[in-house]
Length: 212
Image (tube, rainbow, N blue to C red; front, side, top):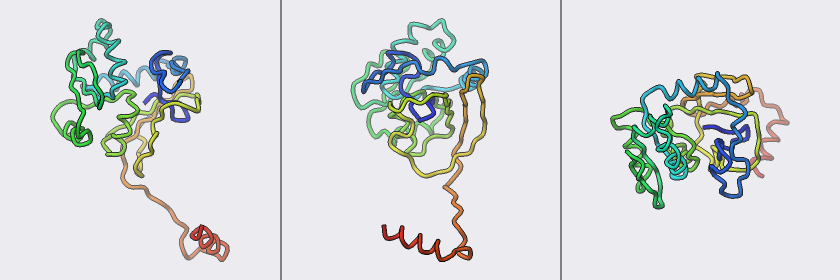
């Protein structure tokens, strides 16, 4: 997920990538990449994978990468399997593309548990909401850019299930970008005030808010 500090992930790559809802800051990620963050991306994409994409991200990729097969990423994207989640019509003429349109959560779970390489998701903000809700994410790479936008599609647009995440790797770029990799880490752990340490003021506060 290429995202801003306030969680926006809409159109990081170009001005006309996704202008829906009047979004006007397309290409906001451009100033912040460097060798360190590029190496992290290269590491992720060096392992075998297929692509799992939402409709809009799939259409962005399909309008670009088939015409740039001489680029290493284009060569890879054109060759591997592409799974696109869409409930409206989509052109599947990009080679090796498969549509998932019904019983989406069930089909994604089958796909995840089946044979084959890892499923790599780029962008796809709507699809990510389903993956979060169904707890289908094994690894989350957050490319946090030193910028806030205040509006736009967000990573946690529709909320998510309460759960802990374990930080397993960080990369701090020279231009302020932080790449943080998380894996699921069980249920949320809390640390309440031991009842033996309660005083009258705290008891009164709890009673007040319990009635609110």
